[in-house]
Length: 83
Image 1 (cartoon, rainbow, N blue to C red):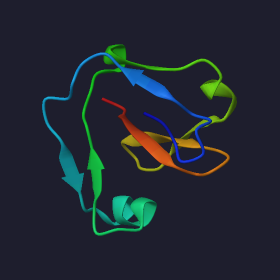
Image 2 (cartoon, one colour):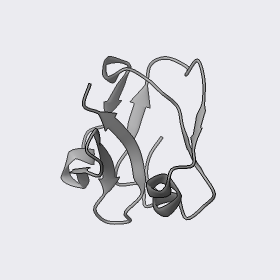
Image 3 (cartoon, helix red, strand yellow):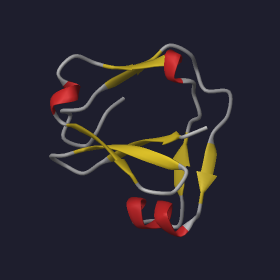
């Protein structure tokens, strides 16, 4: 998978067991939609492909988590929970 412009790419090693739709105000703002869909996975089951780190930004968006997004196209790709 990856961002809109293709500069940030990732690979997952397992198929997600579930999909989640979040409709909190932050996810609605990030997606520009009524909800944002997430596929939960463990960090060890995914990796960023070479070259992505140049464009990848991790920023704190809530008191309990951070999000990866592309600094070129602003695509939000992950949420990383603190716990």
